[in-house]
Length: 368
Ligand code: ADP
Ligand code: MG
Image 1 (cartoon, protein in one colour):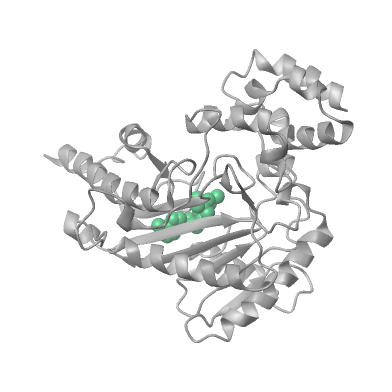
Image 2 (cartoon, rainbow, N blue to C red):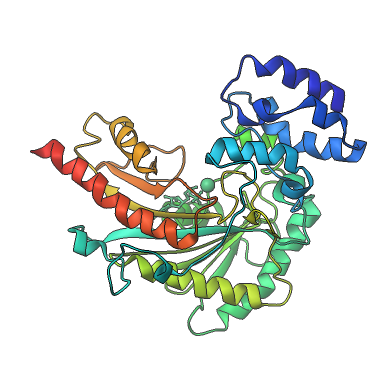
C-alpha cells in the first residue's frame, strides 16, 4: 500500500542516512502521483526499504521510470554521481576527442611498465519493449531469452563470432548442467546465481531464477552477452593483453552490430543516456576493468589499503570473482573507474589507463 510505504520510509529516514533512495523519497511529491504511478515508484524502492542498509536502495523497473519519476530519480542521481539535479548525459566512444592521451591513440599499459593483464569492458543494455528485470514476469524472461537466441543464431553463423549460447532455463535446448555452469562462472564468463542476493531478490530482479537466464560466448571466448542478469543484457569484451583499445573497440563494433539487428531496440533516455536497472549504471552502463596483482597493498590479506588509495583516484576495487568476492590468492584485484554517468565511454577507458599506473606506483612505493 502506498501509504504504508510512506510511513516506513519516514521511519527509516532518521536511521539510515546513507540509503540514497530513502533519503531522496519525498512524501509531498509522492502524494501528487496517480495510484498507478505510486505503485510503480513504490516498486522501485522495495529493495532499499526491505534492505535499509543499501547504499542506493532503488532500481528502475520500467524503461521510462527515470523520466516518469524524474523528481525522485534526479535527486538520487545527483546524490550518487555527485552531479547537479539538472545533469544531462552525453555518450561518446571517440577516444580522439580526449586530450592528454598517447598521440597514436593506443592505450597500451605495457608503455606504463605493466605486464599483460586480463582486460574487460562491459555495458548494460535493456530492450525498450520489455519491463526492466525488476518487473518482468517469468513469461517475459523466457520471451526475452528466445528473442536473444534468434540474435545469437545470427552471430554464431558469422565467422568473426561463432561460439554458442548456454541457457539455465529448464527445458531450453541450450540448457547446461551445474558442472558446465560452474565451469563458466569460474572462467569469468557466466554470472553468479542471483537468487541468494537479498538486494536483487527484494528488487524482483532475481525472481523466477533460473528462467530466462543464460549467456552467449563467441568462439574465441572474448565476446560475451549475458541474458537476464541485473539488466536484460550485459554485453562485454574480455581478453588478456596490454592494449585497452582492443576490448573497447571490439565491444563498440559488436554492440553496434547487435543493435542493428531487428528487434534489438535498446532503451535510452534523452536526458540520461543508456537506461539501466540500477541508477549507479545509468548513462553509459559501462564498467571497464583490469585484474591486477597488488601483493604489497594487500599484504594484510584485505583490500582495505587498495580501496583507500583507489577511492580518491576515482577507482573501485572488487574481488577476483567480481563484486562482493574476496581478493585473489596472489593479491589480485579488479580495478575499474567508478563513474558511469555524466562521463563518456571514452573518458571511462582513459580513466582506467591513467588510474592504473597511479595504483601501480602506490604498490611500488610500499616495496621501497
Ligand atoms: P559487472 O557488474 O561489471 O558485470 P561483476 O563484479 O559482477 O562485474 O563481475 C562479473 C564477472 O566478471 C566476474 O566473474 C568477474 O571476475 C569478471 N571480471 C570482471 N572484470 C574482469 C577482468 N578484467 N578480467 C577477467 N574477469 C573479469
Ligand atoms: Mg554486477
